[in-house]
Image (cartoon, rainbow, N blue to C red):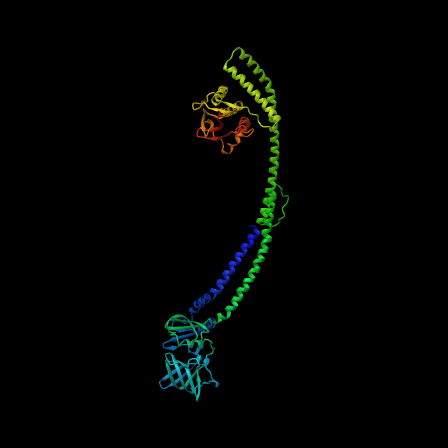
Amino acid sequence: MKLRNKLILILSLVLLIFLFLEGFFGNLYFEKYFRYSKVLQLEKIDFINGDQVDYDKLKNYEKTQNALVMIYKDDKIVNLENFYYIKVKTKTGDAFVLLDAFLDNLYSNTPLKIENRDLVEITAIKVLDNYYLPTTLIKNNDVFKDYKFSYRSKNIYNIDGRVEEVNTPYTQSSLGDDFLESLLTIDVLNPQKKKYKDVDGDDEFQLITLNRNGYKVVIFYSFENIKDIFPSLKLYFYMKAIIIILLTMLIGIVLEKIIVNPIVNLSKVSEKIANLNFIKEIDYKSKDEIGTLYKDIFKMSEKLENIIELYKGKVSRNKEAQIKLEESIKLFMHEVKTPLSAIIGFSDMLLEDEHTEEIAIINSESKRILKMANTLLEENRHSQSEMILNKKTFSLISLIELSLKILETESGHINIDISHLKNMLIYGDREKLEQVILNILKNALEYAKSEIKIYIEECNGEVVLFLENDGPHILENNLDKVWNKFFSSNSGDRGLGLYISSEILDAHGFNYGVENSDLGVRFFIVLKKGI
């Protein structure tokens, strides 16, 4: 996936997750959280100090919390002035009639006006000690009824007497009537935190009763406000979501311009460098991390270009040196033919007079070297032609013994173990395979400390020849390089023997290799078995 698409995907996922959480918590938990936090706020009262009520703090609490508070002690409402009430003098004593709910539920064409000294007949429901909610009030033959609660029959009392006190609260609370109605169904004096719905089921309230220093503090709060503002909050969330979407799109465009596009261009620059199309200048001026990266890649491009130019020069020089070396070898081969011909002629004459094994070896090896020189020169003239092989069946052990005889003077103190050799017949070009064995043996003699082992194993109808020496291990990364032209682990020495051997073995189609062993280094050749 391209970087631009990844960025769009990531921003989209972040946006979707944010909107989901916003909507989920906003719709499902905002109101719950508001209610929970509001209850905690309502419980924090500071208007009761010791056994005294600080009325200034009480008024401030009711104003800031938008709540109604009733304080009760010794069977009396301490802050009775919060309510619209009348005190009626009866034959049995004084009765306090709370009128907030009655006035709210009153249905009458005649206005209710009560003054001191008025005679009244009241049917009321007792809600607290000596506190009543009227259901019917008769004054001067005018009958006033509470249409909500006139049907109630429990705790009904008749209050007949003269009005001695009329209290109109300084600040009329909209919660007074609902609070008084709650007294009909809830024992508000018991400590509690309770949700309450009015008789109609339209409005929901929180009722909290606390005990503080002998006072019972009843707090009444309406959740009507949050119901009014919650639709507005939903609209706010929706508008916020739209703004966030637009803002995310804007951020995406800005990020694409200042981050994605430079990185995409940087990718194109890297691709050019990979194709050896080196940049000459950078087109990014900002001094940020991307600008630093541009500069680093520009430096890398310059260094890489210089290294390649240096390498080209070195390869060219090496190629020239290789050509000179090959020319020297060809010249040497030309020059060596004359003395070899003389050696062959003299050895032929000596063989006619005295046939000894040493003179025979000198004669045969001189002829082999001369033939190799002629072949090398011929192959150089026709480098594209295949190597010509003269294949036949011959004894492998006799070939090995001859090679050891030739190298007898070079072996010196090296112990060459051939005790496990088997007399096996193989099929191939005898002279060229002799050259292979001589080259590998010379290599072994060069590196061996004191011991060389030569042994044969049969495997799946093939003959495997092993030549193992106790010389130092070859580095793992050089094991395949020993067959390369002019390769040698000795600095300054450029070898051809193993390269020529690999060419001969490849021409035969034989498998071969070299590996590190417990003894030291082991060469192996898989030969074709003769018939």
